[in-house]
Length: 544
Image (cartoon, rainbow, N blue to C red):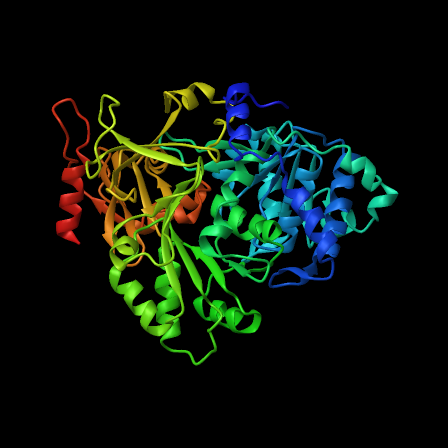
């Protein structure tokens, strides 16, 4: 399958000449670091560890197996795998032959997975037998009838007759018995081909499939080591899911570009994180601001040696000043930096080591080299520094379109600038401060909750007449979702437990469930009937 993109020859030439697109693929980095340090530990997870030489061998066996299944350049492989080494192998093996990775967040359920795999037109779906007591093969079996393109299902730790293929058996056959290294090398993709299809929360009832090329993903990583002083001696840690762009870039791919060791954590727990820091000498981690909140609380109670931890990059929510101050008191050598980005454009801004406290706590960072930002008014005219407007972005790590939604893609571009849907200010020094969202999305702990998607699902409940989901402030996770509803005629009761059970039956991921329910006589609205969410927030805020 060939996905149509907005990539043009002019754009390719411009970013190539400027040196941002280097025509490198992630498996080029794998080959390079394996040649330099074959016996160095590459990744450690909760189940095993693997050297770079072992990793390349497993990747090549997996890639050769994909070819035997008939998967070729441009085909999509969907995989819903926790932060395990298998995730990295799958991503690299798919990339090796020019196919397209479609990682799915492990907490997604029938509703999300069914839509995403269907839109992607995946040829192969890979899941674990079980994770956190959930049976992924059983879910896939229920959905498979709706996926005409899926030819095989592969299961990690396969039990009995789950799926068509066992991952362990699949990678057991030596790669040279399937396809030679030279044959695999001959399949090296064009770096401007789509290599990643990753879904982001939609604002209109469906998630959007964001497409990235090899060049856009490599460009997103290249400035990081210089700004943060990273080398092959860095020990990277990642607890954010690798199926988010943050985890994918800075947990799965960054270690290869550095030649560094990565520690993968599949379930977030601050105490476990501190144990990993002490055991492996972790120097860098990245995650949503609640992770830092949990770490600060855990550090205050531990006697572990955490002297190696030097960098904590927070994405997805502002960093409270008190949290940064407390982190510095507990871990004087730790640098905490805030950043901002989207699935569409990777990490656009990040603080700079040495920034004063006001820059760390009151801004969302400074743009990377090659990434440009501006704020514009409603008419699209650029605004002066300090003025609030719509935030636009352009640069080499920008995506190349929404899969099968190119009209929707083009609607968000203006003279080459991508409209992020956020409101922001840019100060005189070029630092950006996000001030709101034009999109109707709630951000809970760095996770986007697509409001319209949740509302549309709740509207399917016959007990409800009207629905509006709004965000209410929370000191730890920034916002929590509150469902405000009115009841259908003749209905006298709708409980929080009923709402949860309904969303469970609908197969909605639990992270999207509202954490509060308000049953009201009426929702405030304009004369035309449009719900006034600002008034609704005031009502539920007063009742909190």
